Image (cartoon, rainbow, N blue to C red):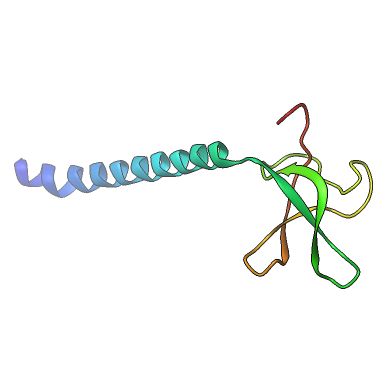
Length: 97
């Protein structure tokens, strides 16, 4: 009886624990990501294709509307990488969020 228990039940229990651990880890990473999201200066691509800092604050929290240079018009504002390339679009801040 003990042999059947270890052969049949233990692998299933291990799989259930592994799946539960994966979900717990993923949800913790998502919560941490939302904590670190902050208001940041936006950059826009100029005529030469270089990233230029714009006078607009944006957010990297996913929202329905992109952050634009002139609030309702103009180019989309981006986050830059280490080489000052416009890589990640930023989002409009609505009601301080």
